[in-house]
Length: 235
Image (cartoon, rainbow, N blue to C red; front, side, top):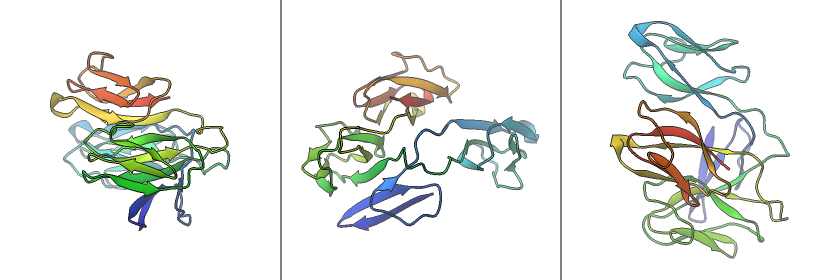
């Protein structure tokens, strides 16, 4: 579930797994398996795809022109998800309940082309780009950065920024999943702060994703080209 509200001119975004009271800074559970499972009904047939379902399943992206309606074209049982009547889609298991030991603080900050500032109490805490929302690249010190108790964005950068701990312990441990897709075989950048590398987690395209040829990374994010569509793990 997502929630957002406007405070002092800025949009705040929350990510939650239950209907909990909203807080200014979202707390997001870390360490759960966010892998997406693709399940496809070809020729209108019934197909079953194994995946964890004990906490429930959500449809994250429909791939077919045919409808994918829960209960008629897709559903789940104790061992996986099923599809029928031409439904083709990607599904994901719901995350576990939040843990007090692994929380993320996330702030959404957006530029419409102009310089914008989003106030947040940092107290020396580190900040990194968790997810780029704009088609325009978000690059640190070029189109986003920090000042005392605020994050600034410019040049059309729109993103979700993660705020680490101010006690020097940094960010929660665990890789961050990022979906990056080259559509129309064109080059695309997906902004995310990279510290210790990127791994290709799951290829979604029929076109091969080959590192340094159709995908790669630098400190400002991941790039894909030549029709490569994939999920990546960012460390």
